[in-house]
Image 1 (cartoon, rainbow, N blue to C red):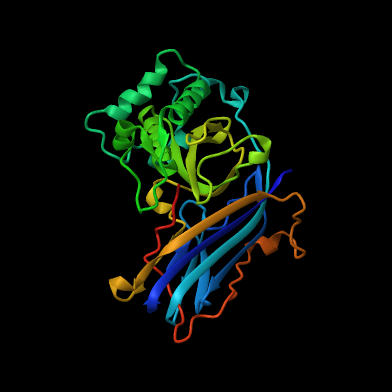
Image 2: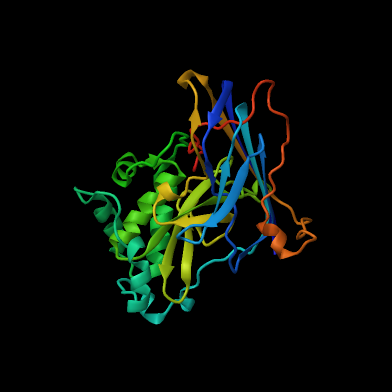
Length: 329
């Protein structure tokens, strides 16, 4: 099974030492049949005074860090190694009634899927509805329909990285035919929901193996894509930014109902507005076939290690910016 490693560093800088509140981090990948965490460590400087990890309503691991000191810089380094088995959906595995559109989920599934089947964004002129239904003209196969939608975004929209907070309204993304990965993911989610299927937002990392002739958009920051639930196959991944169908090159960290629930790093700080000198984010994903599971066994992957990598600047201690500015695309 291929092994991928990720180094994700976020740094906030300030003109003078500032105080900060609790920070929320969504960094640990989700284990699944095709993805297993071999190791995961998070180093924060300055060192937090307290931390705890919780599981959110969607089964994602969320780590909360508190600080008691002031500092001129906050640096959060997330490092992980995962075994990753690429998958691609096979319509033969779909429950027969779900192989063609339209179909209805059975009652047991419907009760659990209802929150991710409902539209979340207004579409008063029905532009997203019309766009979604444009793919029905010559297709009834469920997978064919979803693949066509994925590839239309990949080839018909302009990828424009954007680092400010938030996600574009789906109707705006459609009108501009441009956006970043989180905008594309949200547009496809709303279009899939318009056709009566369940879809959710995924955040994580993407591997771009240029040496193999594939160059994926969305590297250098966290990435976003879509999962659609199809009976018999479960949650299937689609990356409209790169036209990927299945999990190839995608490292899943969290799956949520709405993008606002998937911010990788968020928190507050107290100081003068002019104190903020901005933030930098770097993400590097590499193939590391030599990586091995930690000596302590699978349980070691659940340990978060907080250790200083450098001492705070003189006169300073802990810091954090109005986080949530980590690029999701």
